[in-house]
Image 1 (cartoon, helix red, strand yellow):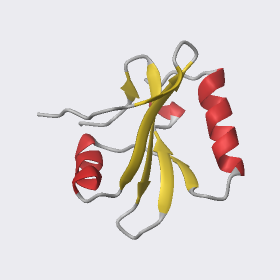
Image 2 (cartoon, rainbow, N blue to C red; image 1 turned 60 degrees about the vertical axis):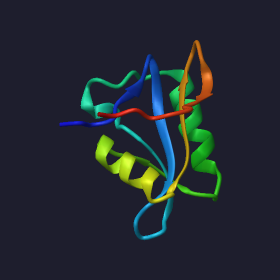
Image 3 (cartoon, rainbow, N blue to C red; image 1 turned 90 degrees about the horizontal axis):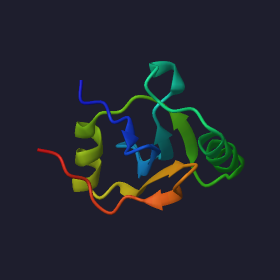
Image 4 (cartoon, one colour; image 1 turned 45 degrees about the vertical axis):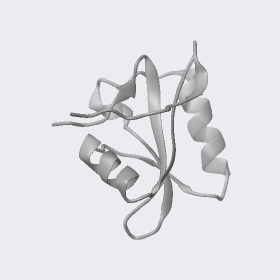
Length: 96
């Protein structure tokens, strides 16, 4: 299904603009059953939700959506967060 789920043992977040120009942070939802719940993830979501800079959206996304957004220059940042790594930037995305 090529869904983007996690980066290593960290929760994945993507700050991007949708094709319609809406600025969002997206992360996979917990109801998938394969996403690690945790204090760091919850704290990041809570803090980002309090800011008015972008929407915070928990939704499934595919690697195709992410690589397309990168190619179109719509991705501002990709990062992971987790207890051991706190918040860490993703420096590159490799696929196929």
